Length: 125
Image (cartoon, rainbow, N blue to C red; front, side, top):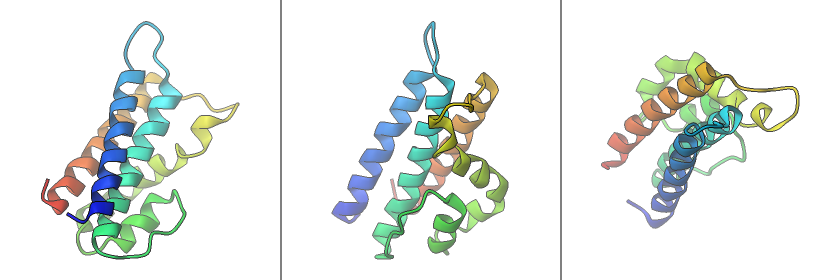
């Protein structure tokens, strides 16, 4: 794996760990779980783009990023609705008026895990 792609993976894993930790304990932070799950997914997809030497756009739009990562991530295009849901957590989860629920946090972790698994397989991890 290219060094820059490896750095994207390391950063993605930090977000994965943060998302999981923030959902535990007496006072779980569901909005932050959703945000870090989205960031994990985004950084994993950007690792594929880096590996392919595709210029990485400054966007949080997971559908657009996954489309650039073809054919390696073709399976993720079947999950377009889930990608759109996750994209919404990149910004909305950090501002007033938007508070994620426990169910949304669980769903975001499940989606991020699916993306994480698919990308790791693509990268040979």
